[in-house]
Length: 146
Image 1 (cartoon, rainbow, N blue to C red):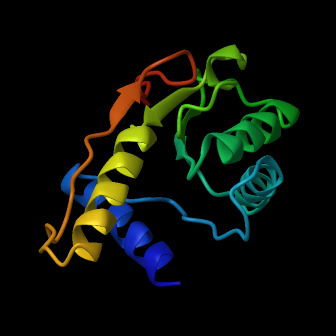
Image 2 (cartoon, rainbow, N blue to C red):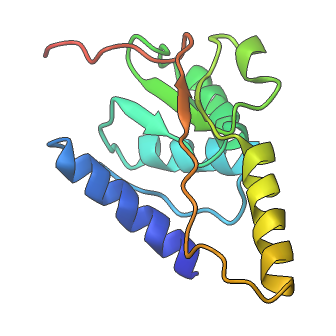
């Protein structure tokens, strides 16, 4: 999928700009808890060393948290976990999930406005940028010095 490849490349580029690189970027079929659980289980089984997980959705992060818990990893002491979407359940997980919040209502408003403008025969902007917000909760911590 083109979108998945672009997101993957953007993630790798952002990490490189920060002076690091991903240990692994597992592929999964769905953005749900079972996919997150399976992906983290495979990483641990393959002895991949990692200190943080950035999940494609809060649901995936929920599965990642469960897999880490089941294998005795302490979050955030040993592994930080960040989700995406700021789902209603995110603050009620233990530890409460750090996540990236997107203003999906605003994105929807702009998309509908652009569609209506285009249907009226007027030119629409080529792009729109929505600024995400990082909501820091309990599932992340600074990496300890080794």
